[in-house]
Image (tube, rainbow, N blue to C red):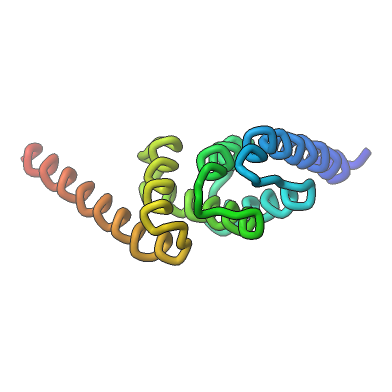
Length: 156
Protein backbone atom coordinates (compact mmCIF):
# COMPACT_ATOMS: atom_id res chain seq x y z
CA UNK A 1 0.00 0.00 0.00
CA UNK A 2 1.36 3.40 -0.93
CA UNK A 3 1.93 5.97 1.81
CA UNK A 4 -0.66 8.54 0.56
CA UNK A 5 -3.30 5.79 0.54
CA UNK A 6 -2.46 4.92 4.15
CA UNK A 7 -2.87 8.56 5.22
CA UNK A 8 -6.12 8.93 3.29
CA UNK A 9 -7.61 5.82 4.88
CA UNK A 10 -6.48 6.97 8.36
CA UNK A 11 -8.01 10.39 7.73
CA UNK A 12 -11.31 8.80 6.68
CA UNK A 13 -11.41 6.70 9.86
CA UNK A 14 -10.53 9.72 12.03
CA UNK A 15 -13.26 11.83 10.42
CA UNK A 16 -15.85 9.15 11.09
CA UNK A 17 -14.75 8.91 14.73
CA UNK A 18 -15.08 12.70 15.04
CA UNK A 19 -18.53 12.62 13.43
CA UNK A 20 -19.64 9.88 15.81
CA UNK A 21 -18.35 11.87 18.81
CA UNK A 22 -20.28 14.94 17.69
CA UNK A 23 -23.46 12.95 17.18
CA UNK A 24 -23.16 11.65 20.74
CA UNK A 25 -23.50 15.28 21.87
CA UNK A 26 -27.12 15.13 20.64
CA UNK A 27 -27.94 13.40 23.93
CA UNK A 28 -27.49 16.72 25.72
CA UNK A 29 -28.43 19.21 22.99
CA UNK A 30 -31.65 17.36 22.13
CA UNK A 31 -33.00 18.39 25.56
CA UNK A 32 -32.86 21.96 24.27
CA UNK A 33 -34.40 21.20 20.87
CA UNK A 34 -31.07 21.14 18.97
CA UNK A 35 -29.96 18.13 16.96
CA UNK A 36 -27.07 17.55 14.57
CA UNK A 37 -27.32 15.16 11.65
CA UNK A 38 -24.33 13.30 10.24
CA UNK A 39 -24.21 15.86 7.39
CA UNK A 40 -24.26 18.70 9.93
CA UNK A 41 -21.36 17.13 11.81
CA UNK A 42 -19.36 16.74 8.58
CA UNK A 43 -20.07 20.37 7.70
CA UNK A 44 -18.94 21.60 11.12
CA UNK A 45 -15.76 19.51 10.97
CA UNK A 46 -14.95 20.76 7.46
CA UNK A 47 -15.48 24.36 8.59
CA UNK A 48 -13.28 23.71 11.64
CA UNK A 49 -10.51 22.26 9.47
CA UNK A 50 -10.73 25.23 7.10
CA UNK A 51 -10.58 27.70 10.00
CA UNK A 52 -7.61 25.93 11.57
CA UNK A 53 -5.76 25.94 8.25
CA UNK A 54 -6.50 29.60 7.56
CA UNK A 55 -5.36 30.63 11.06
CA UNK A 56 -2.28 28.39 11.07
CA UNK A 57 -3.50 26.27 13.96
CA UNK A 58 -3.45 22.54 14.61
CA UNK A 59 -6.00 20.58 16.64
CA UNK A 60 -5.88 16.81 16.85
CA UNK A 61 -9.31 16.25 18.37
CA UNK A 62 -12.73 17.85 18.45
CA UNK A 63 -12.93 18.44 22.18
CA UNK A 64 -13.35 22.19 21.66
CA UNK A 65 -16.27 21.64 19.29
CA UNK A 66 -17.90 19.35 21.84
CA UNK A 67 -17.40 21.99 24.55
CA UNK A 68 -18.99 24.60 22.27
CA UNK A 69 -22.01 22.37 21.76
CA UNK A 70 -22.42 21.90 25.52
CA UNK A 71 -21.89 25.57 26.31
CA UNK A 72 -24.21 26.96 23.66
CA UNK A 73 -26.99 24.38 23.30
CA UNK A 74 -28.68 25.97 26.32
CA UNK A 75 -28.64 29.46 24.83
CA UNK A 76 -32.08 30.95 24.23
CA UNK A 77 -30.58 32.73 21.20
CA UNK A 78 -29.91 29.60 19.12
CA UNK A 79 -32.60 27.75 17.20
CA UNK A 80 -32.43 24.55 15.18
CA UNK A 81 -32.48 26.63 11.97
CA UNK A 82 -29.26 28.46 12.81
CA UNK A 83 -27.61 25.83 15.04
CA UNK A 84 -25.02 24.59 12.54
CA UNK A 85 -24.09 28.00 11.15
CA UNK A 86 -23.79 29.40 14.67
CA UNK A 87 -21.52 26.55 15.78
CA UNK A 88 -19.29 27.12 12.75
CA UNK A 89 -19.06 30.85 13.50
CA UNK A 90 -18.36 30.20 17.18
CA UNK A 91 -15.55 27.78 16.30
CA UNK A 92 -14.00 30.40 14.05
CA UNK A 93 -14.40 33.04 16.75
CA UNK A 94 -12.78 30.79 19.35
CA UNK A 95 -9.71 29.99 17.25
CA UNK A 96 -9.35 33.63 16.20
CA UNK A 97 -9.31 34.62 19.88
CA UNK A 98 -6.82 31.87 20.71
CA UNK A 99 -4.48 33.50 18.19
CA UNK A 100 -5.20 37.02 19.42
CA UNK A 101 -4.47 36.04 23.03
CA UNK A 102 -1.39 34.08 21.91
CA UNK A 103 -2.74 30.90 23.57
CA UNK A 104 -2.23 32.45 26.99
CA UNK A 105 -5.83 31.86 28.05
CA UNK A 106 -7.25 28.43 28.75
CA UNK A 107 -9.98 27.03 26.53
CA UNK A 108 -12.60 27.04 29.26
CA UNK A 109 -11.85 30.63 30.25
CA UNK A 110 -12.07 31.76 26.63
CA UNK A 111 -15.29 29.81 26.10
CA UNK A 112 -16.84 31.52 29.12
CA UNK A 113 -15.90 34.92 27.72
CA UNK A 114 -17.36 34.09 24.31
CA UNK A 115 -20.53 32.73 25.91
CA UNK A 116 -20.94 35.86 28.07
CA UNK A 117 -20.39 38.14 25.07
CA UNK A 118 -22.76 36.08 22.91
CA UNK A 119 -25.51 36.27 25.50
CA UNK A 120 -24.96 39.96 26.24
CA UNK A 121 -25.27 40.66 22.50
CA UNK A 122 -28.51 38.63 22.51
CA UNK A 123 -27.10 36.03 20.14
CA UNK A 124 -25.97 38.45 17.46
CA UNK A 125 -22.86 37.00 15.86
CA UNK A 126 -22.15 40.35 14.20
CA UNK A 127 -22.10 42.13 17.56
CA UNK A 128 -20.15 39.28 19.15
CA UNK A 129 -17.45 39.25 16.49
CA UNK A 130 -17.43 43.00 16.13
CA UNK A 131 -18.06 45.20 19.13
CA UNK A 132 -17.90 42.66 21.97
CA UNK A 133 -14.79 40.74 21.05
CA UNK A 134 -12.96 43.72 19.53
CA UNK A 135 -13.34 45.37 22.92
CA UNK A 136 -12.12 42.23 24.68
CA UNK A 137 -9.08 41.85 22.40
CA UNK A 138 -8.23 45.54 22.76
CA UNK A 139 -8.52 45.38 26.56
CA UNK A 140 -6.52 42.15 26.65
CA UNK A 141 -3.68 43.55 24.55
CA UNK A 142 -3.70 46.87 26.40
CA UNK A 143 -3.46 45.13 29.78
CA UNK A 144 -0.75 42.82 28.48
CA UNK A 145 1.25 45.80 27.20
CA UNK A 146 0.88 47.50 30.59
CA UNK A 147 2.17 44.39 32.36
CA UNK A 148 5.09 44.07 29.94
CA UNK A 149 5.92 47.77 30.38
CA UNK A 150 5.90 47.43 34.18
CA UNK A 151 8.07 44.32 34.00
CA UNK A 152 10.55 46.08 31.68
CA UNK A 153 10.74 49.04 34.10
CA UNK A 154 11.44 46.70 37.00
CA UNK A 155 14.30 45.07 35.04
CA UNK A 156 16.05 48.40 34.52
